[in-house]
Image 1: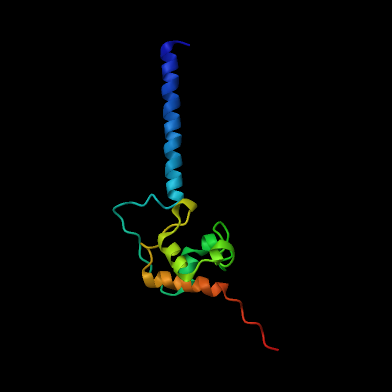
Image 2: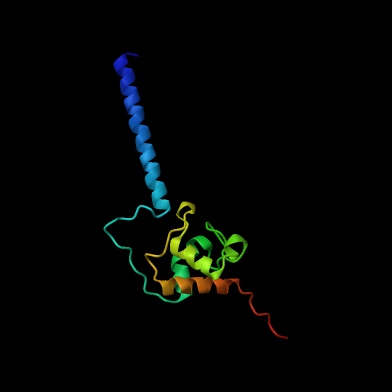
Length: 131
C-alpha cells in the first residue's frame, strides 16, 4: 500500500470513529435529557394533583405503583428509605447520570411536593379489613 493510500485509510478511520463518538455523546445526552434546546423553555404542566403528575412524569420508569421498572422502586430499598425532604430534592434535581431528569423546570414547588406526597402515600400499608 502506498503512503497516500495509508493516509487516506487513517483519515477515513478518524472520520468514522469521530462520527461514532459524536453520535454516542448525543445519544447519551438525549437519554439523560441533557440535550435541551437552549432557546426553548420546557412546557409547564398545569396539573396539581400528585397521582396525575406521577403518572405523567414518573410511572414510565418507576411503575404505576412505584415498585420500580427501568428506575428503582420508590417504596422499598434505597428509594423507599428517602425522607420527604430527600424525595423532594431528588425530584427537583434529578439524578442525570443515572437517567433521572430534573423536574425543577417543568414542575413548580407545589407540584413537586404533590408528587412527593403521592410517593409517600404509596409506601403506606393498606388498611386491613375489619372483621
